[in-house]
Image 1 (cartoon, rainbow, N blue to C red):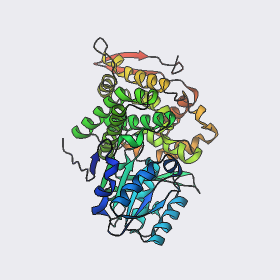
Image 2 (cartoon, one colour):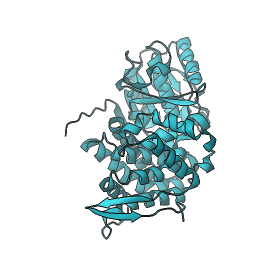
Image 3 (cartoon, rainbow, N blue to C red):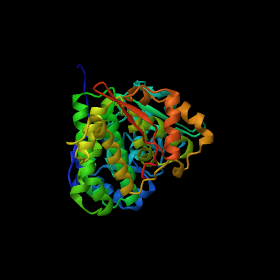
Image 4 (spheres, one colour):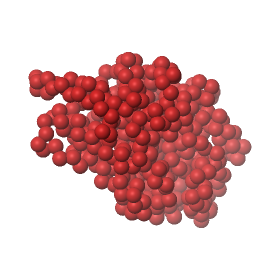
Length: 408
């Protein structure tokens, strides 16, 4: 097997390391850094910790805190204007994926012409952006170590994915203490986002030995820690494990890419403004079932990593156990059973199918995917029932009927 692997981001991890933010970032800031964040992060007091450290190390900064969920090109335009007005020469994203994605977009468009939508796809950014710096405050997106950013075009309601080696942050600072104030609902959504990244990168057609190692360890860490962070919240060790798992999953999918969950969930974010992590979590079991025939051994690995005992099971049953484990986690943390509960409207089914098939994630999905496949996945996830599949194992055919509600 031939592959290349590159993670140019410097990662600093530690409980309480936020006090050293200014020291760590100083080499990347010549005159002034633009801090990109959102109102929630500011209200939680996290920005104050960042400011204190920047001030202590005498780093000049300006704050742009207008980031929204599923960031739009309009918000990006405001951020670019703000950066130019204040003559900042580096960009620091503080928050979840939306803040870090917006920071990436601002940094890229500060040195490249046109509109961010002109760069949809892979490696179309020509000029090196301003230095991108990242401090995640959720354990979900892994954006601090990825080469991608996503923006919603509000005119078309399409979430545009831009991927470029230039979008890797120069440095990422991970402090579990900055995630301690997360509400349980955000802990659930971001934790399942990280699990989806890990599972989709592990089963991706583009995966390799290194990306698989990162992904399976991330799955294991999430299986050990997500419920504790959801129900207890104040356990620093579990928070730290989730933060590391999110980063590892981000590293994995930055190399291997993702699959049909993300192809479809991005359309939900664009059309219905559904939070990305919740959309991923709800779709995940249905897409995993669709992919069973293509990667049963990987599904068995996932089941084991999530704590299932598969020693007495056939490959077929062990692979199915991965879906069962994900359903159990979803149920435990209050993830909806169906996308109907998220506000998805099947009146726009064809629009969702068309937008999903536009995503490069369908290409890296482990099972060949057609528009009709996407349609069936969406319909199954809407009605809350699995399809009937035929599972082939060592020349024997198993008729696996799963026409029941996912939580029955």
